[in-house]
Length: 599
Image (cartoon, rainbow, N blue to C red; front, side, top):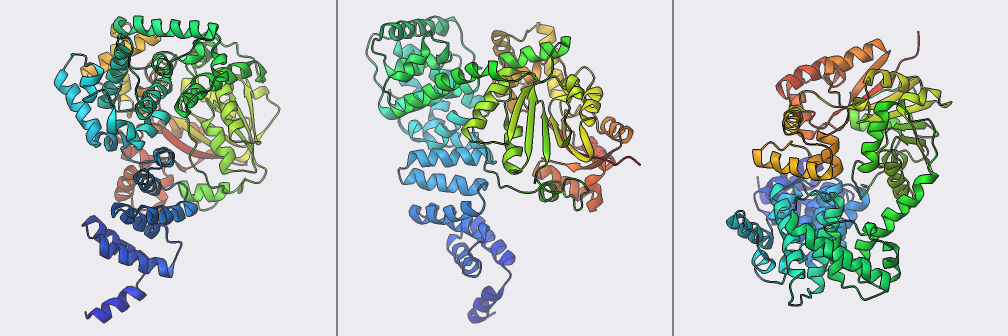
């Protein structure tokens, strides 16, 4: 083909084919032809998101960071939940020295699905050097200067992805956990030495972020008496300074906050009346302002039903002590209709019943800390959402986040699912994710919820897979053998035992106190199989519509094995698939079902 014919072919080619060619060039390291093809596509279709993201990524790699910000900003205006766009624009902002914007976009990248952020952090040369020093030290504890290669934290404190991770999510990587625990211990030790230690702003920012991480994971990192005594001394020193109005060293706040939440200090609210740097102000918002707001809100949460069942009271106590799940940032959501949502997420092509979000009533049963009702209320913006839970601590967290987002279509109440049949309300959609399997009789609770569902109403249910949770079951055998209880100290000890044995369950919940308690120490847990689910659906006049939140690789493997579209809504096909892919539902079965009209 002549050069002229080649140009004509490019000009008139299909955008999909051209973009595939651009991606092939990109993967081979040929950035110039990839960028040229993207320009051709964008000249024809300025809203082609893939080309905007790829062009922005290439511009960032070539050091054209202002251009990258412009292109990637255009992509995010079209698709606010594009993880690669957030990741690339964050790198551009970091190169431009705009760290706050870099942290914000890295945070959003992780929320919307950036893959392996912990691995990306470990590729930072400064972090890798610390990990290497720690590995060589074996069981020996490293002082601060030895751990970081000097008292200046250096490039670690400049890593916007690491800061974003520390401030927004529990770290799930064991190497990074060990490093962060070692950094906390080394900082505590250095702060207690007679020689003054005054870290620069970047280092203080890192240490505050470390304290925020400890709060997020609810102080899950192991520690011993060598840390307990000096951390208590700093806590007591702060309490005295607050009471007398004496000066407080910002570093003391960061160190104390890495071992115990600051709101537990007597008169902690008075800290909010002082002037602080931005990093300390963020720490105080997280550890004083927000927790005290939640505590003051708890008495105002309405009780919709009594909670007096013996097991319900035990479950309630668990989640009062450890509200679950832990989350901070809400992902971007594009409002849609229920019909469009089910078509795009589950593949439902036709739907009888509540086919749009206008005026539908949604019940979130077992709403925990509010991520589910907030997601539904934002996605279906004209809906009316009632969210209930046993735990006032969880509900107070949910109510605070709802106020922050200025959502007006969510109502919260304390209630026991077993008593909801007395509720004089009916719903078009009911969500019960991660709650039925904690009831003494899950099917009875499910039937109670069905009694509140209108004909043709929809249910979204999340249930544990017995196959996928075999590692959890094995860990519980060890817990029983060792006699570990659900106290914070025993949970920390149990985690270290499982880490030592190499039996860490492959789930993110292992990374926080509330998650670990929910995962391994739950008062009650049932595990399901697909035949058990199918038997319940058949017996209760329910139609299976399809599975949601299936991992992309799992979905690809399933479609390779079952090519017909009908198989996606066939539980028998999914059951056969799970037998050869036992970790396919490592989180849960997430299924949509519909209540059929009585005949």
